[in-house]
Length: 99
Length: 184
Image (cartoon, rainbow over all chains, first blue to last red):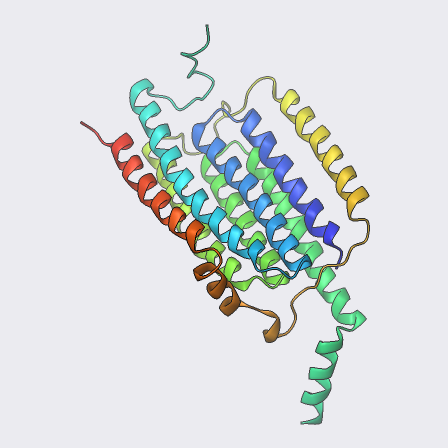
């Protein structure tokens, strides 16, 4: 199989994830789109690992999965805190830093 | 017995039929998961978005198996589908998201986001095509192609320092999440 099949599939998933992050207002949906982006990167790592017959690609994919688990835990805690303070998780309403 | 030997020889040689079958598998997985990802970022129901994300995550696990990374695939199923998706659904529940259709999930100027991602996809596809025109990548067909043992050896020898760093990071994230979300 061609390496490009995997890389372009990952690029498609990445761009869909970026679209989700840019257009969603609900905080939980933004976190889901971030998971999509991280998965696309993981496909790239595993594909390049297979291409170079290097085990490091898989190992770093596993590390990214662990970091994603940490990220979603902290991210959801922040979203819950925003919900508790403002009764809404609309990320476009959290604009205190806007002058 | 003869049939078994013939089969073994065929799978070592990687016939064109096997190539074809594996390509069809890849095409189906890629189409299904792209469609599910598109539905995920456009649907107007938060719980449906989580279920579409499940389809995408399972497809990515299948892609890992095609590439011979079966330990990464198992971890993907356990951690992403088993833990992260459930955590996201808990988030949906705790923030009392509207069950059923909700027409206030997207920004008004979503065409800018669409433009950004389409331009980015065009640039990335073009540069990937220029860089790796028809480079081949080996795919896994035999049990011998899988390498969980090598992965675990590699984690606990070459990558032991990043592994310990990840452990500390997970602990920090755990305590941080508890501290941030605690009611006081």
